[in-house]
Length: 246
Image (cartoon, rainbow, N blue to C red; front, side, top):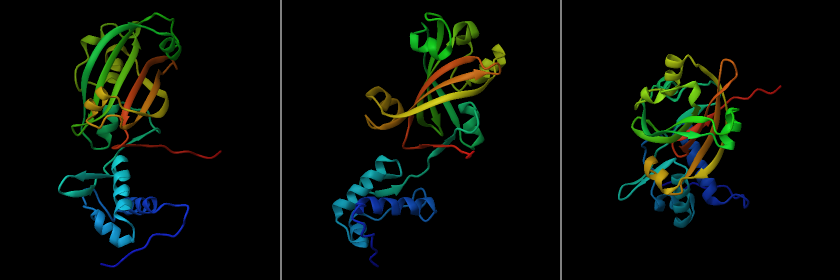
């Protein structure tokens, strides 16, 4: 077996150099989804590093969702991330269908509540106004990817509970039943960690890194209609945007 070498830059740890080499091989297609990676021993021999360094590299790649380690079988590339973009505003269902994927939704709960100071500010409504709330689990190709909760003023969508079932688009209901078409959103994101009950729903380890998003959706009249939060798995979802320099 021909021995390869990593760079000698002291500022870049060997595990990070090997990690970047494997990521590069994935991105250029040299390694594809489902391919088996060399064992820790083989990686150590190939790159002249310790088995501990090779093990750490694979652990980091696993945490980032790029590889999957199967007991007794080895380590396999699992770089089949779902891309979500910030360029066009679309419903989750239409977005996934447009990518050739199969979306599904499970309703976890529905209810009513009074607007808290935060929700009143986000939706530009009086504090205490009645809100409709719905929490849903989003899945793609039967894999859970996010937990989403929506808050909409009851006066905009009275009796909407009667229309909501699994796999029905909330945005389609608003448009078809209430004449409300959502056309844009303001979104804010940060990294967080899943709690136990969230981890069970998403089928991930407890305290896994996730992307927490807050969004306010607007109608054609630039009126705030929906405030939503979502907790999205970072191991199988990546976000995409485009920027133009002025």
